[in-house]
Image (cartoon, rainbow, N blue to C red; front, side):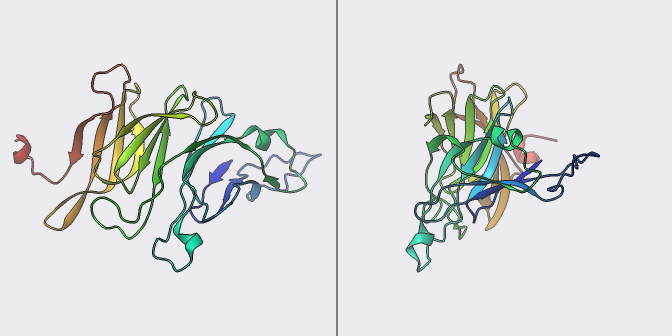
Length: 239
């Protein structure tokens, strides 16, 4: 399967990439839509961005982070739900959809509220209002690391703390517009890529910030260093 998010729609689409047809069975959805998770829409806009499967493959974690048009004349387009939700992936694999596509409602297993996008991010004005932007999970699936594009931060969420989770740390002071996060193989550091990074002489340089995420470390939640091409090699003491 391929799973597709959309920052302007309240659906997460599941695409069928493999033809499972046999002599007795025709895979009607191959190279098409197998299923669609429908996210409830109460008020404002709903949109999804990054996603990650749980280690056991039973759950799908999805960032709710819609495209908010904060200067729109329509009030409903100026706000939206921002959260980390967990969807029941077993409803896709357990049902036989050979005769049609699945429309999946009531599949949310957990809901962790996150920060909404603010009207203007902390540094360079990027003309968009985006809250949660990227997601990565720990190897055991108990922690989620979520970057926030507007306020240049990363939230560390305990997913094993009940249906609404718990934010155990908020890492501040990241570079401008963090948009991706990955973990080191040993799970002790997070590497956060920032789209605009740092600026010098009106030019923006993308950066990678290294964050200590070892909960047993005295520097847990701190920025350890950053990688950037702003300074020259000689400025950094390199030959």
